[in-house]
Length: 374
Ligand code: SIN
Ligand code: CO
Image: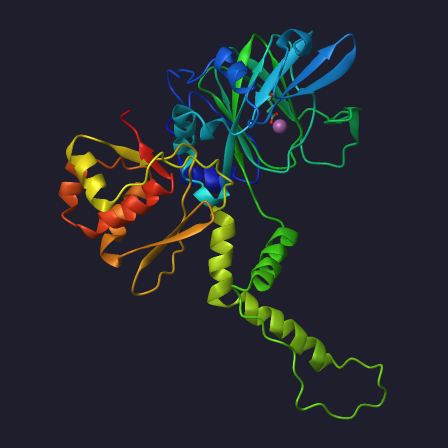
């Protein structure tokens, strides 16, 4: 049966788990456990090994110095944000672009040996679990008040949860799990799991954006004033109208265009590793490279966004916390490149616009678009 994104959104997204059988037909792993082990040795890549051996749970954080010491008993090697380093892993996320980019987080990849798992737990975020090589049995429970415990200081698990359903996943199958649904995956054979993770800001984080914007000065902060101050029966009283005025002060900041800009910067901020090019391009040099056959593409793991409501005189978009502006006449090609359209001479010529090369130059010099053909 073909997958219907709209049916998935109305029936399952944030509502109930579902298995999407053969979501990736003839799935081929873009990475293997040896590549994963290589990444786990890198200083700036977040990785860990969770092992169950000698009746105890062990957690080793990366960079992993000795796999021999860490990989004992039943063990799982987990590496975060692999999409930022391996374009083929980043491409896996494209299959889920019925969910907006600003909700996407990263791809965590795990390799588990037979019988291994990270234990029963629940996550705060939605996840699509893609089964790579091997097979894995997932036991899923319904949301509830379950007792948490820490069998190791760095390992949060649930003591137990009643089974709602079990699913056995084979290569190319996908299991969607909404936040708060407990789950426990046990590898039936050595297996790879790709977790497409999402993010959802909480109120405290949003409020932090407001205060940071105000303190940083990009929101024009108004001060409370009361020229109409009248006598009251007791000096300790705070009038209801004063409370309303104070709240109004906050609301007026929230509805300002400056706050919208601040919010877009926050939503687009992926804390991407900076891959600045060795030398800066000029528009002429870029044109020259394109004519000589170069192709440029969106950097691995990068998810730009733009607001639906646009100013009349430009098309604005945000990449990794930064705002960029293109001419409104370039909106169509910019929308395409924000979705991963490769940029080469043939495509540029088909556009018949020169202004676009300027914004392209800026994006390449920032490291957000890279040469794909080298
Ligand atoms: C794993 O890949 O072992 C864990 C994924 C998850 O349960 O969220
Ligand atoms: Co989980």
